[in-house]
Length: 109
Image (cartoon, rainbow, N blue to C red; front, side, top):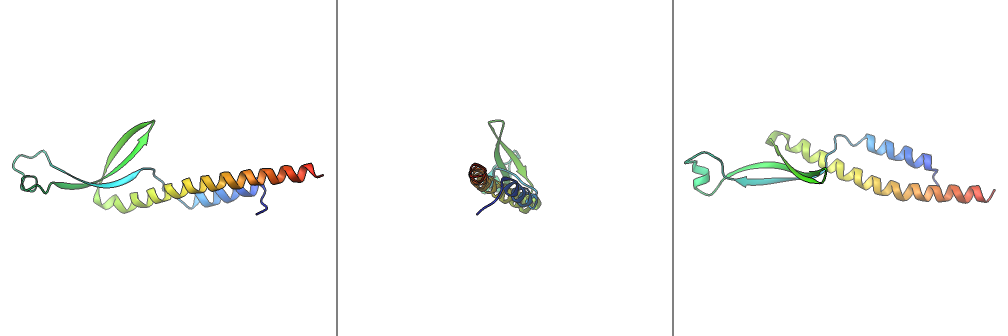
């Protein structure tokens, strides 16, 4: 592919613009007991399930409770975040190749 560095950057910006919202991390369904005494679900070992977003910020792990009705939106944001990381990796290769091609053309003049 013969692209200029500017074309690669334009491609990247256009591709990333379409991916919003974004999030990094993982969404998990966890089961845990509650704090109520004599809870039938907890007493029976069933516990209570809830979704949690796990991730890292400033080198530290975090977890955030995600209400059930927000799970689809958070899943989409995580998928978009993964796609952005893939695009960054692809952009790095394409940009480097474009810079090398530009240098080759300039040195042959």
